[in-house]
Length: 291
Image (cartoon, rainbow, N blue to C red; front, side, top):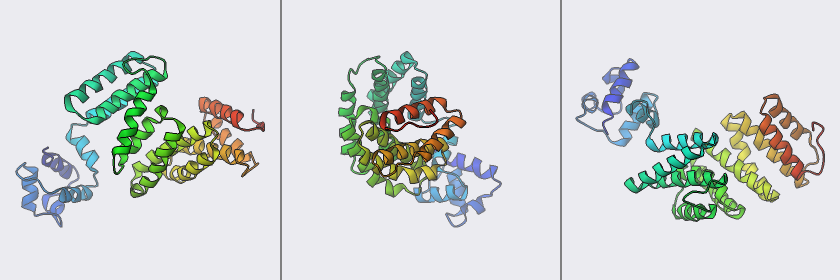
């Protein structure tokens, strides 16, 4: 992959000459050779160049590929979009496309995208090549167990396929995720992934009335919610937390819960507001004044 030309374009757009960019990293002549396609520096030096350019490797690759995303990410986003719009035939076609790419390349991620599409169809009673969610779970669980060290991809994968797992498996893998998250505490992206995953597992625990485990995951999710600056996610996490502590009789006060529900309503998240009200009715024995 010839990245030197892209580095040159970024350098020039920022008004830097070769001597300034190369200083402390490599000789100016080596930078010139790199930009000319006659030399490729070690990865450590490339990262130092990117740091001086205030550029991430992901952004560099995005620019290098003429502002197009990698195929896997494009397919994933398109699949999610089609699912959100309930475009079942489009989901089916994308699922087949991902399977074909898996057979062509052997890249596991394409097969995971195929399973994601098939899982969406199953959830909406549009069964296709896979007939039961348990078939998907039986593939995903060994994959997650077989990875010695989890990376961001594995956390995303677990979150994407939680709907195929029973509560026992979701809790098991969620507890492993909690242990593995620590090494990523400095990455901004990991905070959002962590918060969403833990929030979703806590909801599974709530649905099973396993309030102790719900509280365990919510206590891990709340600090991440504070750091993601995603207001909606933080409010939902706090609503789950208030329901859980009331059910565990740790608190009898519904004032905070009512306040958080009021915020959802004030922000016009009416579908979410109604869904949270229904959740309260399911778990709480007390009525809420705003009903």
